[in-house]
Image (tube, rainbow, N blue to C red; front, side, top):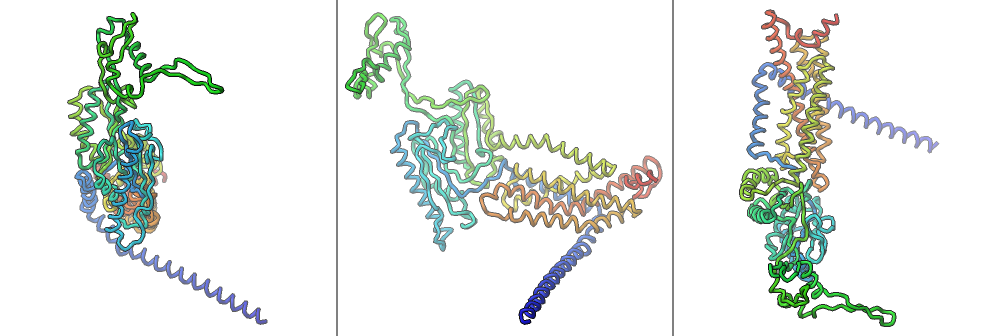
Length: 597
């Protein structure tokens, strides 16, 4: 009996909890319903009535907003770029000394750089992390003979690794755990200032970002005239280094080891000597030739003959070396040949059949637009280089090339997509004015896309373009919901203005909630600070800010455009037929309904 009584009490408690939960949910639904009605009746309905009454004034507001946005983009207030600068939690440092530098010297220089990295980290900790016991720099990886780029040899830049190459990987505290203002770019900038110029280094790069699509500035110069090519490279590199917006200027034409180039005089031909014959004797003297093998027990001993170590170390030995002629006489090398000492090439690159040198540079500030820098170089520096060195061809690579590939692809697909949208909607509604008005909303929706990027300190870039394409689909879908209801109202016998008004009121909830839920779903990505989310942010900003404004466009601007288009059609009918016609009777759904009757 006691157990049965306890069980009944337990069931009563459960029933009460379930009832309370449903009461709570019903109150939430009622509150949401009241809020939606308030937004529709108090905010939206008067605004719609005002917009339809003062159509040109209301339309001018949207046009002015679009014009201000275009002017802000052209004026540089809203930035444009190829790809977003993705802040990283790792600062990588690449050092390249002249080919042949011994390992001890390379190690001493990279160790000096490492000490400056630690100093820079401690200095930033004292400014931004005073009350934090955690370290800004968690650990550092040092590599000799490898670059920091995926721990692989820098083959792409003419280097085959070895003792002349070194790198550091500086791992910072996760971005979620350190102050938002303490970015990797600050650490990289301070490292550059503390290290300064490394004398004799061919390349010293401090990279603080993941450069999606390649280097922000990458220029390939091409020519079959090697002398002009190298002169153009030197001038271009110096110009880029003097640009305060650029840093870490490097190229893929490093100098090799010092070589002695021997050139025969005319006297050599007179005694029957050729370059191959002379170089064979020089090689035998300095590198040596195997002349005999001796067997000592189980071991075989090879005997080589060449100059001794002291003689091989002196250039005068080469200068005074006796060369044997085909006649058997001995002539000093200085009498039949001249020589020069210079560094050779360790890598030769070609592009489009011509000798090519590529110059790369990073941005000194992540807020600088790579697109602006490239366009400036195309307008000012490159024409001067091409005028001075006539054999030079120039092409821009890296992010510029990748962005152009994406944009060209969009130019091919985008018009086709718009045409298909226009055709499908036209066939569905049996009119082409309404789908045309829907497509007119697209440029207006870009207004808040641009300002949203400015608000979050992002330039509009290729990734943003992908979000804009997704936005167009949502915008068209909202427009279809409105127009479908509008046409249905016309077929039910409502007047034109009443059909617009009722369509706005009855489709307000569906369109508004679609926008709110989409924005709410994208908000975590937009507000996320982690490294992994940075690439997706421009796309999310485009969709979220665009769809917020698209709600206003669908519920206000679309009715204005429908009303203006109707007035134009009524006026044209009066001019052509000489008779007035009701506003609703000129619309395609009503005409189609009358034909069916």
